[in-house]
Length: 138
Image (cartoon, rainbow, N blue to C red):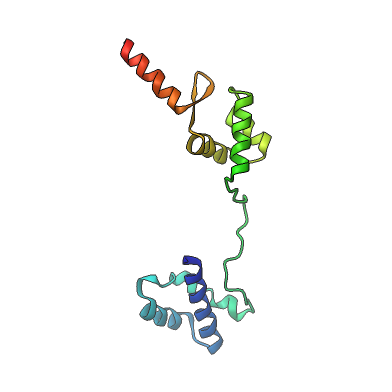
C-alpha cells in the first residue's frame, strides 16, 4: 500500500519535471495536495534524476546484505539442526545454513521458542517448569 502511494507521488514528480518545474515548486504543490502524506523534500529533489533520463519510478534495490525471509523450510532446517545437536551454537547454525546470526537468533527465540539452559537448547516451557521447581524448593 505504502509502496504504491510512493510510486504515485514519484509519477507526479516525474510529470512535473517533464513540464519543466523546479523541485521547490514541485514540493510546494505536492505539500498542498498530499499534506502530511507528502514525500520528504529530499525525495523530491530526485527530479534531477528524471531530467537525466531515469524512467523507473519504483525503488531501486539497495546494495548490501540481502534480506533473508524466514520461511518454513529455513525454520525446519534450524529445528532439525538443534534436534541433532542440542549444543550447537547460533554461529554454527548460521555457517551450516549460510544465513545471518541475527536471522538464526530470531528463528530460535521467536519462531521455535527455544532458549539456552546450561549450554543446551531447550523449549521455553521446560525453562519455566525448571524455574518453578527451583523456586518451590528454595
